[in-house]
Length: 311
Ligand code: R5P
Image 1 (cartoon, rainbow, N blue to C red):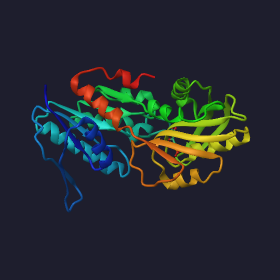
Image 2 (image 1 turned 135 degrees about the horizontal axis):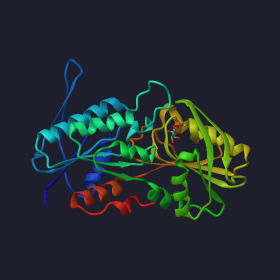
Image 3 (image 1 turned 90 degrees about the vertical axis):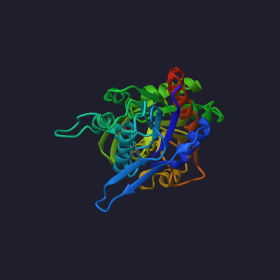
Image 4 (image 1 turned 30 degrees about the horizontal axis):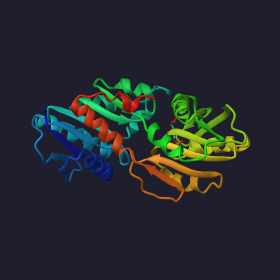
């Protein structure tokens, strides 16, 4: 069997180290240089020839820098005669750019997928894409995991006798329903319309939330605009308490502190798909390293990965 070689970009070294520890393989060194003209150069400092190469890079802030780094690492691995180049992208930020919803607008989700393949990526392992159709933007195989198992295990430790799962929008209602099924809970969803990056309207909640302990489930929290708008509707409808759960805790613009400051928000739960700059007593961070390591191991050994992403 071909040897595995795991490299990490600079976006999330802690997650790369954790994944390598679970795989019980060394993390291979990478040299990143920035020239006077601001161009980057990457050197993979371990043999790639005929290896099964995995490059771990989350597309988080600074997204463009991390993306170019990933592209250069893939190019370097391909140029070094890797047998296969696997990109492990715990957070694929451009997934939100997945449709032409305004004239003359770019569709970054598709473009970045093409760039990765052009750079030499043969296969992608990722987590909770903003919408399932983004999977189809890639012309190479994609293993698309979710974090519902980890999130559900966390909430099973809570008193769920009065709980309901609420998706902020209909787009994520299917995942919220799958999550609710895991917990044996009812589900509700907001009717959401996004006006801009910093403005959303939720005009109604479909389902019963009055007097319930709500678990909001979303794919990501960025500025928190969506969750704050949903909190307003939940308060109007008499929800008793609110826990907030998501896969990608990006928490831009101090969103974590703002959210935690709300008295009726009992806890905030996310995964470590993105590195967290802030901490808070109300925040719990669940690790996706075991799931990603398990997926990497199965991909490397040619085993089925589907049991990891079955809803
Ligand atoms: C968007 O539709 C997503 O599902 C999330 O709701 C969104 O990305 C969260 O962003 P923000 O926290 O800035 O509203």
